Length: 158
Image (cartoon, rainbow, N blue to C red; front, side, top):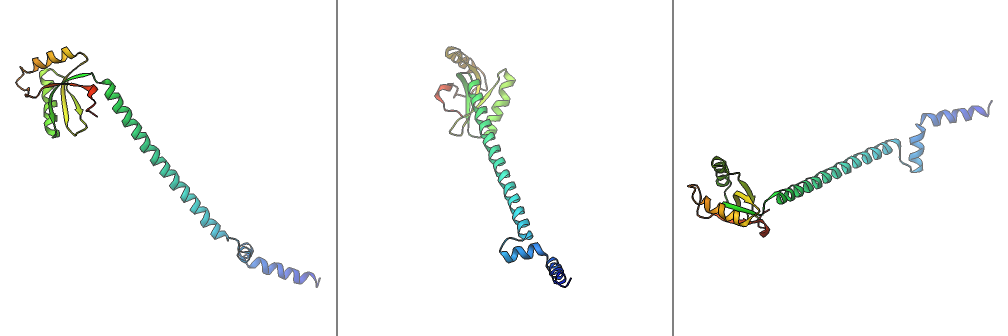
């Protein structure tokens, strides 16, 4: 019994010293608090990485959607457009867009690469038809002097 008593006292002392963290700190290993902080940092980093990846994916999807929209608009366009005006100021282009439906035309607004908005009053795939319509438009009192036929194969738009 005398030999067991010091052994029991030693076990009780070790138990009272918060053994795992104390032993780990003596052996140079991370304590439970350090492990918890490291786990929290890993979780935080992975959440930030996932958020960045999601943002990049959304931006890429927006880019692809806008390219698809531009391509759809380009393919939906007829080849020849009778243009009634070219505007740098949006309010002037909008005024022309509001005026044309009142006289029976369905206007299309083309954005040129140089920043001008071109208002097309009539669209067709036939060049003679486009010129005939242009000459008829000269009789309208809203028609400016700079009416012309635009061929979309010139690729000045978008």
